[in-house]
Image 1 (cartoon, rainbow, N blue to C red):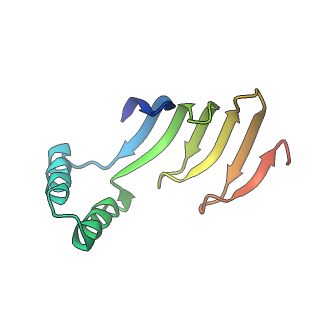
Image 2: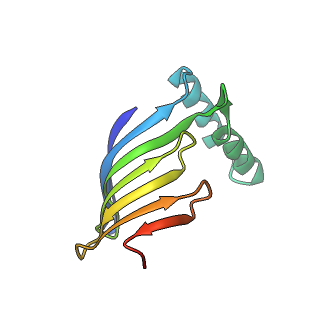
Image 3: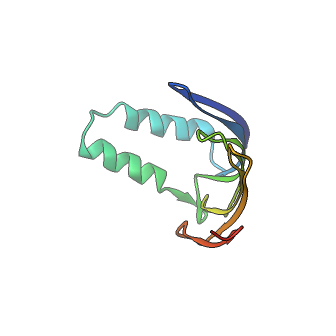
Length: 119
């Protein structure tokens, strides 16, 4: 999948281009399942159903996994984020709003394991 996003939450803007993997299942099946969960009354059952839907895997892969994001975050940093097949960020390159560049390598849990420049 390839899509453009623009979000504005009271002036906190995020915009970018995303490349993502999506499981090879009919989109209408996913939409129907999502609609049925959204129609449930708020509460623990709805939360559990949503978590189960989001945890669904097809042939060992998640239903959706962001792989590449290029854009600007709410802190006004230019950002390139590369993620693994599970959608976990592994490399983040950014130039913050003051012009300071950084390169971070992350482990599977999202912890920075290496950073340039070093802090």
